[in-house]
Length: 221
Image 1 (cartoon, rainbow, N blue to C red):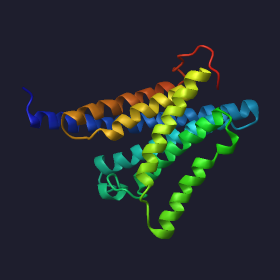
Image 2 (image 1 turned 90 degrees about the vertical axis):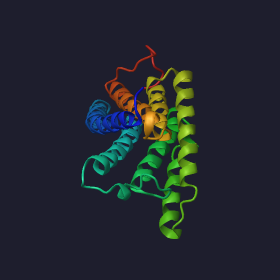
Image 3 (image 1 turned 135 degrees about the vertical axis):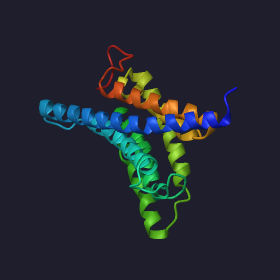
Image 4 (image 1 turned 180 degrees about the vertical axis):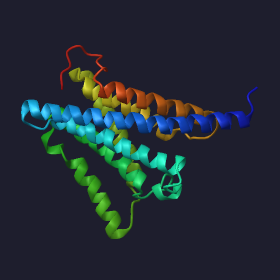
């Protein structure tokens, strides 16, 4: 049988590999999505808001992975500094909250729900103002989880209903990412968490390169 020490060593190794891998992959994803956004702007003369929002979502995830890499793999940033396990507006939670918020905005825009285009953003930054003004962030984590699940559900529904590869891709990405957030990083479950990190980073690159096309004639861009 595999001993606990062996599992711990394997977990630590995979977690470390995952952080290095994520930094490289999300750097590529951010560059690719930025180039595609700029190219689309030059061709159409307008900024494609869907592409911009998708870039924003992946940019937030990139920010989170940068923090984790600096805290766990380098002496540059102490682990406590990123607020990985606290409930207020830490550097980590800010990026996570903004990512799920942009997911809601993206779903509203794709479905042309104009009254709700920026409602989630206003609410999220309202929470941020409340935190700085009153020092409270009691509903931040419930907001992140509820908004994240809502964004995932809306993106999945939108992708399947409109046959939109972009919305469905974001939904799949959110689903795998949430697995990595919910799973602990210790023991056997930690090994699964590390593997999920590798999977969702790889999927993100496939999505950014435009190879995720379950629908031959997508309803959206």
